[in-house]
Image (cartoon, rainbow, N blue to C red; front, side):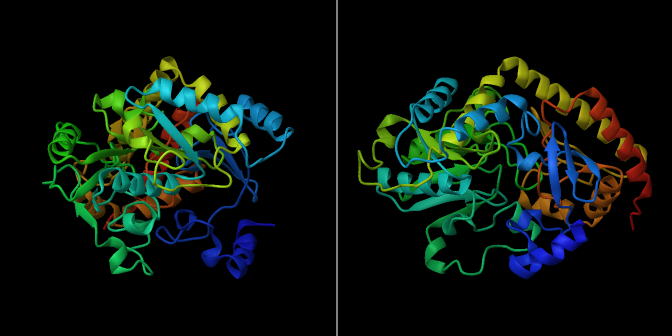
Length: 420
């Protein structure tokens, strides 16, 4: 059955035909391709086409798809049962691995998604401080919990939304939205400041020098907790994530994607003096039937075992080659393009200079060029995310041959684009 036929079927039983709006082709037009299987840097659709994949499930595929060690670990775990509702050694081992890699992180709790991680972290921050207000930054996406959807990036932005229907005024009354890369003024009503240390849900916007350091100083002065949402940057920027990469230590962290090896997972953690407010030790309740799922723990362990300093160096080198090659290919064919890069994370904007905040990113994302380039590349076997507010995720499976094939396709694709 073709992608078109499956999409028609899906729309009869699934809202919009997709189980996450970011998979929709609404912002680029056309019909989404339905994946049949994936391996390494490639996905294969039901129509028999192969694509070099830079979506990589929006970040979990840091090793590439279906890595043999991850598949082996999940298969072995599944044979022993898929979920128990009781503690396992696998949870302890992965928690130890996470804590050991990140300086300042003393305790971690696993959940089933990044949204659960951020939602639980905000509740914890409020419970630990006795304060209500939180500060977030425009264009940063922290999952779809009500209080965090205001001025969000990723699918919220690509659907042309500024917030979300169904979120009451009361749900966001204690949420303050500030511009990214500007240190806000804080007072003693603020429980936490939550930030993507690299904003990867409005394309890719890097923190300007002094921004993260300024947040640390401002939080300390106000007695607020600094939260790094590392659902994307965690264990991708460096062995110790953004805290190691930038030399700034938050009070709380949120994780997802990479630590699940492609299975549904999230986690949040921090210092013991904050984390011990969680039940059963303290009065902040959080729970999850599938938290610490043994399959996800096995996949996460197999993934982290392969992500040493050498692997991160190779990821950064790959992203650098890709960024430089795409920039030459696109601009050489007459397009004005910038590809901001932070370590192995990569963005793509069609304009003169990289954006520094959501307003600038939105102007570039909405200029009508990205959908043309997206489809031109897709026709030539290269899959980017179907929305201009997402990052590119090169993996360890994207070798030199794959990068060169991508650049060659970009030369042809850019030449076919017509800019008004």
